[in-house]
Length: 452
Image (tube, rainbow, N blue to C red; front, side):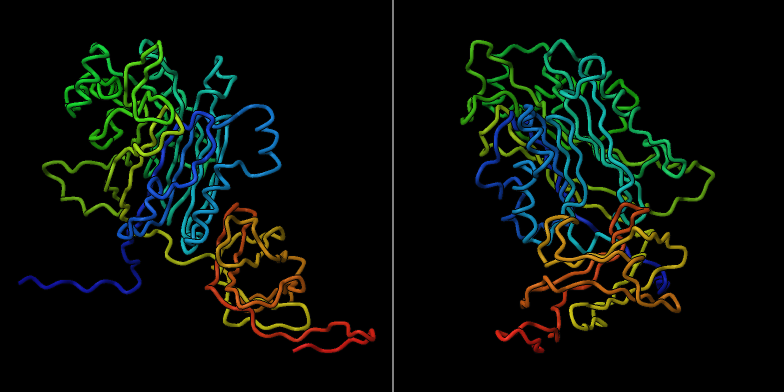
């Protein structure tokens, strides 16, 4: 038996993350009461780490958009209400009219997720109207570049060339002008999904419906416009997709599982799709040594539609992936030491250390959160690291945070360090309880008395 070489103790271990991607054209409907099946909350075997949720045709009327500028839109609020008790935090989002893209992650991953930028690319009305187009979140996950794109492409059978043109245009517009961010085609992973509106060619309505009734999907795949385009388009060919083992997801009568019975009787189609593209790996030739196994690979666990939801004329589609990677970043940039917390009057002292070269800013801040926070602005209290600094020595810093408005409770809390330069959380503490503290309160006679 060949000897197994010992692993270098300084070498980061491989990591497996489970990612659940949702795409759904909601046709301006409000969220239903139960999304457990869509989010796979009843599947105890999944143990998900990240949710990526893309919606199309959200209510984008003037009143709705004005309301959503002051308050969370109903769909975002719903997802946060459901996922925050499960330790998921809304990491980033971007909206363009009816398009919404959300990313949630388990809180322990936050220091290893850096949001590089968000971008909207309208393609409706010659590129000036956002009823069609794409929205993108570009991030670094454990040091790897990932682009996430939610799109809504032009409808109708005859507009296939226009759809392909918009696909290319959205991709071209995702490149950012910062020299430290590579071209999107050099990103380690592109997740691309949405209402792509590709249709089934040639076959008539009755043939398509009979094929669906008899579950003869493979016959229809041959005439699916996206499948056809992938055969000859060199860029599309690089995108992968799981097998379409579910019925076409468009178009249904609302509040039913019946395909369109209106006068138009639109032909069913797989309009709602999830694609992905891994960065091209250089191939070893016959005289070159065999390449080592990749440090970053994605495998599809499931690709399904969810027929139980009928609020829209589309059925939602989800893809669940396993992402295996060897972290390029194995330690957070900031380490918050919750075990060294101590209080004095109404202030809590926090100790933290930073990695060499960390781009600290006076606009950085530390937030105090209850466990179960919905998003990064959901703090109970916070402190600017520049204004509230107490001491620093040997890369160990201390700041104080005001807790006079924090009720004495047995709730668990977290500390998060937010970097202004990196626009991301770069450090997070372990959950803790605020220790008993001594501060003053007024007695009925107006004298200050200590409270233990």
